[in-house]
Image 1 (spheres, helix red, strand yellow):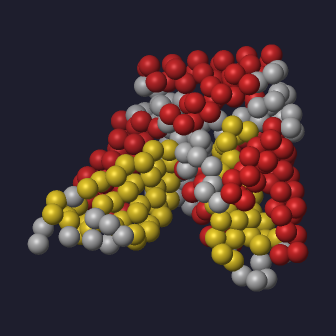
Image 2: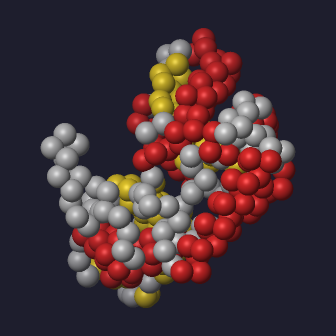
Image 3: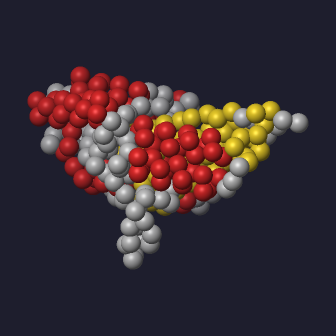
Length: 286
């Protein structure tokens, strides 16, 4: 067994949010550079150039890449051999978010009630997902999810008879409807199967996967590649002004589902796809 103080998790959350709001991960940066190189539209290339300059300035000056510094989403995979000590884990995670947004001078975007709309003034609470896994470590994945793209995400309970065509049509429809509103070029997460809430969670998790890594299943690997080609053929282009690079990455996650259902969720993300992973190992004790 190992012991991990929740203070270490708070610090990991704090460090991660300070980093991702000012610096994109390597896989996302490389995808943007590849999109720039392949873009055929002069306007599209000019927009890519602006995106790359903006990202460079944000990194150099340690200021937010985007004014929408997002809602904090935290995924915790806790090894079942880990004992968490030193306080409440939820409180520690939220404190990490609170301090990072204060010290980074990031915008506080969270309201305490969806209808009363009173700002919490510290960007908490975070949306936290927990999973118990094998092992003696804790994995923390954080995401700062902006709502320009989140608002254009969609979920649909298809009928099994809709099949593959229904899934593809729904994804294309969602991206088409998003148009310029979700700040393309896009990163897209797709969840297929499970239940209503499971497919939504998978679509968000799909955005956390390295954009250069395709689905391990050959069928879904091909579907990812085919969808990227189809969606880039829509001509939406960078910032919706036309071009050949509408989508920089699309990841699909799947789960078994009921014989009567075919849930599908599409989580849209702008070109500022912010996420980071940290693995925390603790002290061995008897």
